[in-house]
Length: 295
Length: 144
Image (cartoon, rainbow over all chains, first blue to last red; front, side, top):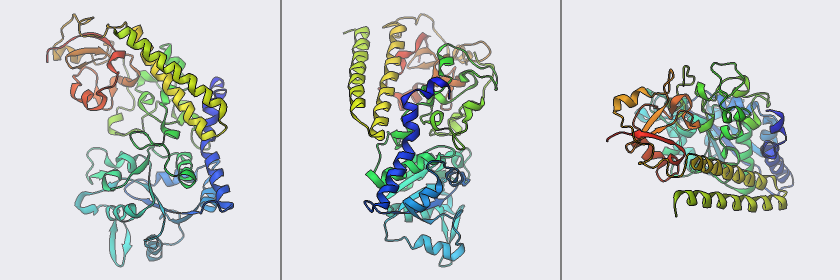
């Protein structure tokens, strides 16, 4: 971020969105104005990158989420329980109120046989069955990351397991938080908003406008280079990477503002083009990720 | 009302909306509302930039008659793939547009489509009713 952007109100206000919401929700829980919600996190056909990303959250952080906002009932990567006792916790939410977060796409080939997430009463539970069972009963369903939102890398050509995003399998609205991975602020901000006010304002692709309302290109610190036609011809140059195939102009999300890894940097800040990981169609429709010899 | 007047009216509408939004910004202290209002301002700015670009290209310059003197065959069009010194052209409904410096065509590709091709069907399925083509320079025609 350059100095000019530091002074821009859209940057400073946006940067606070998640922390303000989470703090308000935590205060409301503490004052018993709202109740803690049950949270189920299903890892389906994906790489578990989103739960790892969530652990990397900073102001708000994961500890705040797990201790002050929600009863984190199930996530197979984080919970101490395993095997039957873990599945008991998952199936124990049946009939109660809970919010469902899902990462990873769903393999539907052969009735979902290619992704078994556990066993219940001796029977294998497929990701396909899990999303149907727990998705339909949830108060809200949040697709965390690009695979759960639109299929993503799991559904990339040739997609041998026939993976799809979760919306097509559910008869209710899914709030989509695409990104590979999803930024912890996006998830925690939306979760806090749901607890405080209900469903946030979404765009036509069911993404919350508070995080997905702006093109990267419109808030990119290298935008002045684009406007003046100063383009990088190879990686490592500090100018606009449009001629290398940057996808910032078609990708709606606020990476330039909040950045990654405790707000240290982001792809363009490290001289690599945006590859459009938060857009539908990623990765197939965002390829090639790098191009040379462009006019 | 000609194209020029329509563009000017749309720019004025956006400016009026921005005025209202700025008034609202002065009255709210809620950061979530502020974010929404700032988003709206950003959208207005994008609209005005697009409209200004359309005006710069010249009202009517993108009509089928203007700048469309050259006829292309599909083989000729395929050479304009945006590489090695060639500009990037695409065909929509028989008209050839220059997308060489269009931001959405980074790497001379756009959501899996490549320059030098007829993208009529894909355009209709994604951008029908949107003022996308008005921003582009017309460079010729291609019989369908």
